[in-house]
Image (cartoon, one colour):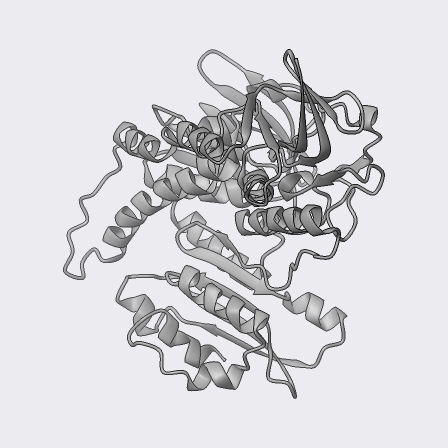
Length: 449
């Protein structure tokens, strides 16, 4: 059966939904397609379920931090019960999302989409012809091209574990590995992180990351740097990872090996070549309006677009809005990637926004750096937090915040204020003079600038 639409959206995550609702509200005839349960990565396989696990382990961490300070440390994680609780957040999502699309008048289709020509999509026995197409398919784990790769457990699978294995190896030193490693270790597992480089979490400030690595190791997690995984073997009841550590062969054993070595756009099987859509490793190649440079009727957003922007939910939502605006009124709006905050939800958590110190130096900017350990501040001591610090870059002359980097118990609150300051060009002196509610994490900002 062939059906015609103004817009066909491939992907029901944040970017796709944002664009679909935006165009439908303007009266467009819109279709949306997904081969997975409706809802996308963040709601089903990423941010939301992950944060449920992190918040639960935070209860245990706070108890441990206050042991001997008036709190008895007797809490432990009950993994099956935690997973049941997690599913109360994720299980309703697909049906709720599909109902929301249908009630808005958006036609829904289940199945893997493939291009037949520039704006014609095949989904099972259905043929969808759009005036425009948006690719917003999200991302999936990057191929490592090593023997035994099929034995890796993905982050999607990890978030569905009914039983937590006793020994877990994480391949890669990115945020997925560190976040799940902290959850696993506080839930009783023996954990190792195998990272091929000399420093993990390379997008974050090296001083903050060094503190996080120390905190991670104190938790009992072994962080193995300069460790290149070469193959994975399955034995009777366990896995053996063969690696090169600083050039020397070494093996590691675990009951599970988790893929934490990066994600790439999930666009390989869309038959993009049939639509003449040019792509690169990072995704569909787009112009400044998120429009395909080779097929003007096609746009891309979120993880599927090769923009170089951070792969974060708020970015995807903004890009979906940009695509809808450009479709409805012609290309006129560009995505704004200034001051996008990013957080590693470990305990302690690490956050960043704005420029790294190295980039500010490379650009020849004149700035001062406020950098301090805050583990002896009241805001850390009253929570038993041993690892907390900040680094703030302030431009000379303008007094603008160029970048902020934080580790500790209040990063989520603090980094959002710094984000607002950078985007709105609020001066450091303005923050210093603000009368924040005290004692809060935000009230520490006055002493950071």
